[in-house]
Amino acid sequence: MDMILAADENIFSSQIQSITIHLLSTIFSALIISVGLVVSTEISGYNLETMYYPVSKETCTCDCWDGYFRGRFPRGHYKIFYFNYEQSIIILLCILLFYGELLRKFLFKIIFNREFILLLLIPSVYSNFYGVWSIINYINDQDYDRMLKSQSYFSLTELIATFIFYQCLTMKSKIPSWLIYFLCTISCLHIFLAFGELNLDQMGRNFALVLSDIISLIWIIIMFIKNPRLKPNLRTTSIWLFVALCLWLFYHFVCQFREKNKNDL
Image (cartoon, rainbow, N blue to C red):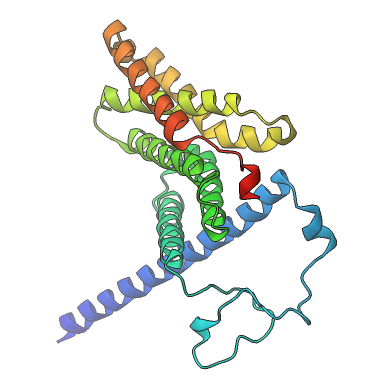
C-alpha cells in the first residue's frame, strides 16, 4: 500500500513539475514575442499617422469588426484584441500556434535541458518571427498579391534553414554533408537577395534579418576548416549552384515583390 501511495505521489509530483515547466516556458515565449515585436517595430519605424493620431479608447466604436465571436453580446467599444468571423482567422491562428510552440520548445531546450549551443539560433528566432509577423499582417490587410508570396518564400526558406542548422548543432552522429551544403545554399541565397533589395533607410533591420545566415556561413566555414573532407568537389558545387539557381528563378518568377499598379490604388 505504501509503495502504491509513493508511486502516486511521484506521478503527481512529476505532473506538477511538467505543468510548471510548460507554464514557465509559455510565459517566456510570450514575453520574448512581445519584446521582439516592440524592438522590431522600433527598428523599422512607426507610421506618422499612427503616432500623431492615436486610437481614442473612449470614442472608438469598432466599426470594422463584425462582432460575431461576441455571440449575443454587442460589439461594444474599444477592445484590446478582436478578430472577424472569416476563414483567414484559421490560418492566422495556425501560424501563431505553430511558431509559438516552436519557440516554447526552443526555450525549453536551452533553459531546462541546458543545450546552450542552441544560443546560436537566437538570430534565427528574430528573422523567423519577423517574417511570420509580416505574413500575418499581409493576410490581415488582405494584401495577397503584392508581398505575401515574397515574404512566404523568405519565411519558408528561413524556417528550413533554421531546422537544418538546429539538426547540425544537435546531431551527435556524423552530420550528412548534404545538410551543410543545403544550409550554405539557402544562407547565401538569402544574403544575395537581401543585397538585391537593399534598403539603406533600414540598415539595422536588414542586418538583423541576415545575421542568422551570416552565423550559419561562419559555422560552415569552421566546419570546412576542421573537416577538410566536407569541402565539396567541383561536381557537388555545380549541383548546389544549380539548386541555388532554381530557387532564385522560382523567387523571381513566382514570388517576387510586386508594386501596386495605379489601378489597384
